[in-house]
Image (cartoon, rainbow, N blue to C red; front, side, top):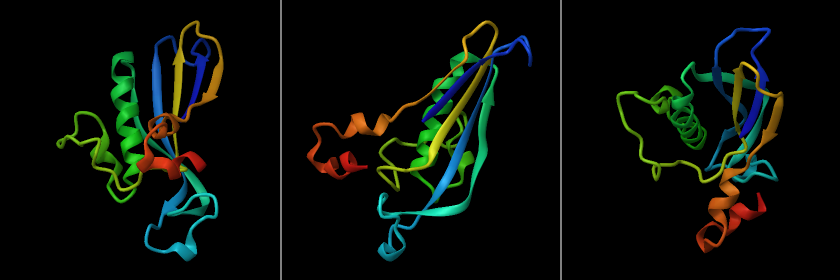
Length: 140
């Protein structure tokens, strides 16, 4: 996940967050000869694209939106709108096509009087810790 925060003084005077899916890879689980050497089951695609997943002006909604975006990244064969919070269907966290994705959830936040800051977070690495069934994720 990539997060970038900026002051909204030059853009708007309100709080705003936009969540994008940066899709640099496509899921090809049944074609080992097409796999990227660093990311089994994934093939790098060109050009990469960043598509809007959802946006909000309500800070309290951001956590659910990020969770939905993460599920969309791990379920590349499902329409991304299916994972937007408050959609018609609830999605179970256990229902994943992939355990890992090299694609990135990007969160951009603008708010009055916040410092400019950007960082990457790797949440899947923590999930794999101590779980023998997920040892392959540690290499990624």
